[in-house]
Length: 119
Image 1: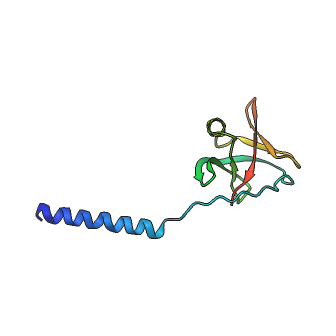
Image 2 (image 1 turned 90 degrees about the horizontal axis):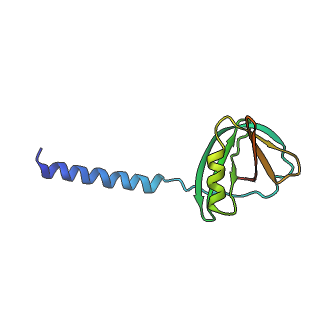
Image 3 (image 1 turned 30 degrees about the vertical axis):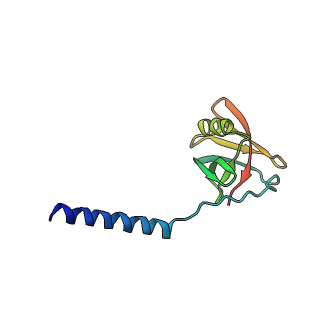
């Protein structure tokens, strides 16, 4: 193959990948449900990852016995980074009934945050 043929094949591959990415790209949308005060749980963290939507950045947390992930959106990016740095897989999250906050417990350390539900 000549260099020209290789470049044309490479360009065609890039265009095909770009087209498939545009067609099959899933838009990540977070819907916040405000009435989660009645929930009570004491579960461990499966994963923690960041997200960004129209309202700004946040941190999504999936718990062991829950299908729906929970999102922490602090009042500023500094609080989001603090939560993302603190919460790790295996930590215990404790939320009491009729509370709009939760605590993360790891060994002897405990820190509280505000919680909202994602879907």
